[in-house]
Length: 270
Ligand SMILES: [Zn+2]
Image (tube, rainbow, N blue to C red; front, side, top):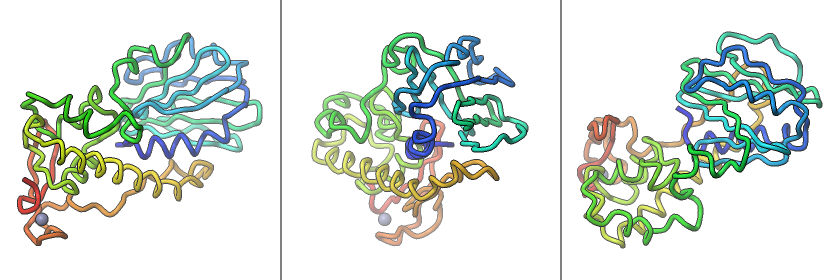
């Protein structure tokens, strides 16, 4: 599933091809995504892209008037085509530009979204209640500490809640909690301010490293032979059940927490 680093890499990959270019045509081959692709997306035709940004895992493509919101869902990807290429199965939407480039949205499982916004993007209902960006100055140990007082919810579910902080997916939550030495099932309200310092640093570190690594895959956005290859970094606990902890040698455990597979070291995480 594309997580925040993949979405950020997608943004950086498509931005140079779209910025200041005019939309000639939007082709919707199949509108049945998570929500139906609205007919208003054709309001983009004739307009230039003035800026591209990301909020959580939403890509915001701002035009002169209004804009498009794209979410990659479980299996979505965007690809830059520099020459026309016959669409394949799951190529649901194309944005054709006046520089000859086509941005193609592919999504086999169709949990993604492709939406039109008339006014300001930030006030859209999908974005207005989102928590701070994990790499922004608003995301601090003090913020997490205050938000978590009297909360009995497991710390892992707490940091994966998009109202608390956006873009901390399952893999990165497991990794960051290991780096901070916090047991994923510990109640969020029972994590000290000092340990939140470590957790915030770990979340920033794991996400920035993934984004940095993603930079090396940017060329795939103009490679017409396949979808962008998502990247995997060296993982410390995720998907390592039964293997020895790199830090203490204890076998890594797997447990379902909040319906998601969680991995942790019972020796290092308390
Ligand atoms: Zn360990």
